[in-house]
Length: 317
Ligand code: FO1
Image (tube, rainbow, N blue to C red; front, side, top):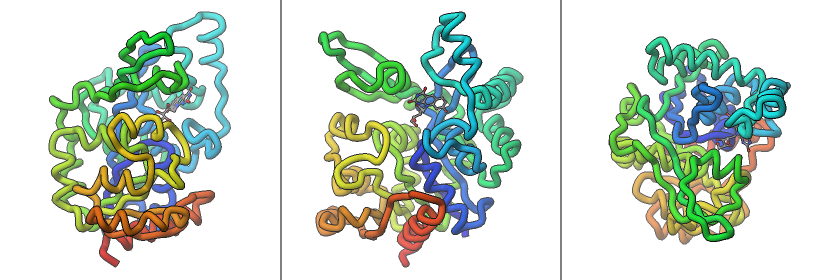
């Protein structure tokens, strides 16, 4: 059984830990968003690739959602306090820095992001192949307006972390997407999977960039009857993050049904939480099958149960 998952950061990490209990990890290929990537202190940081790797390796900080369990932030603290270093607003932990130093040195010696990601995953003991959506630079940028009406063109991390998502979002762009190629193996992983799963990630800035890489959306559409997605919106709100701030910018209603319509051309079955059961008919009317279950992943056992429901839905069970 081959499964391919499209993943962003935190929600995807939890879900994938459950999936890896339902399916042999080596049979799961994860295509991960790289639109969040940024350069900090001269290091290439890939937040979603690292979140997925840490969650699958069992070394993620479950409460924070990103970064390493048992993490300290002494280096970033020194960079901020003593050196007032640019970029020290982005909280790179001491263990996390090892990942960025290792990846950046591999890239500097000519490795692709795919190769560097494989090396990081292997050293963390992750048995599921992790694929960046592209080896080419694709950067999620936010067109925002501050409270004085000043227009800003922000990197996603500047919008979300530096400025705490306080600005009014006018547009979301994926710079470089038009000329990016899917990373090696991405299209094949979608085409050959028995099931394709869209993780409960932010549709705007986690799944959106993946689908914006030329060829990927079409590859998923071609597998629609084997594609299931888990709604990242429960009871009208995201469990984490800022999807509720970004979906309206895309004209998407912040609800399980709204996101279902947004994905209607590429997802065959939409998995929604029990609190949204009343939306099922609207989602069916949009042409998707619906599975209703408990989608709150409080622990790995709950995540496994959710993954099994999504898998069964994708396989037409
Ligand atoms: N999110 C924050 O809210 N504050 C941070 O300081 C922060 C640092 C950080 C460092 C490495 C990393 O892999 C992720 C980090 N995140 C941080 C999360 C990051 O913004 C993710 O891109 C989002 O969570 C979306 O996936």
